[in-house]
Image 1 (spheres, each protein chain N blue to C red):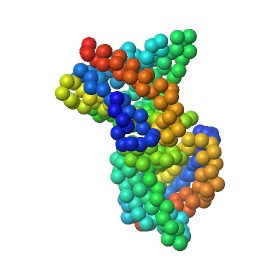
Image 2: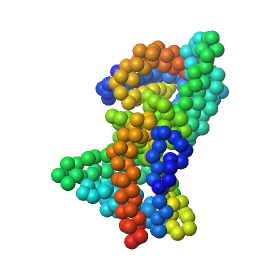
Image 3: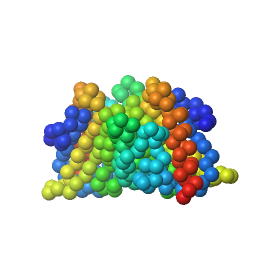
Image 4: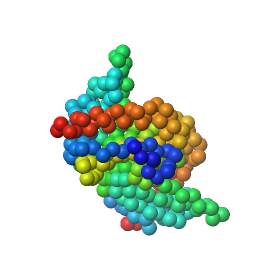
Length: 157
Length: 157
């Protein structure tokens, strides 16, 4: 973990050095069957992932709680650079239909570094209040566990 | 004018049949020196237009009131299809820096129709309250006057 990169009070950041090539991490983020294996901290599971991987393409990721309750997350991709960078937001549910509530924009980057890949998830919110709410929802723990699972899966590819 | 296309209570729509080719209307929207000539209902003027015309590119349009007060409008382009379609939003001030307040997404389309070009500005808001505020700010009159000015300029190109 590092501190937020720009000092912005609207950002949350998670970064890790992962012992796997950029390509493997990118695959884990973009192939539905791989994403379902690492994305959700247990006892939650990711039961559905539809990823229309192009700028303006929709993504739908459905998480399921231990009692069977489903939590759908809808968003769209804004930018895609293969093996390097993914940007998506929940401000739209499709191109260009606004969502009920624009909450966050996620910028995932994969960069070569000695020992593997520097993996960074930069999450920008539209308000400091939303950033704080996200942190209190367990951002660091949740995204941290998911990053561990991502690293473990990527190492097997 | 037509009614909002989807019945959504978050949309405002302006549409016109303009006696000019799609190409001319697209130029008026994308060339700064042309845009400055039609974009603003008098006595306001558009005094600056910086248009980085690519998905994720920023746009800055500065309007000036009769007393010299400047009103900067910042946004980014989300989608660009030459001579056909422009999508931009004020939800970001650059790629991908959230703005202070995501207010609207604008979808401009140019379609061939007998007599010229069907010009449509579809403006989607994140809430019905914002849509209503926009309407009360004079959306129909302001965008209507601008569309008249756009049609007049495009006819000269």
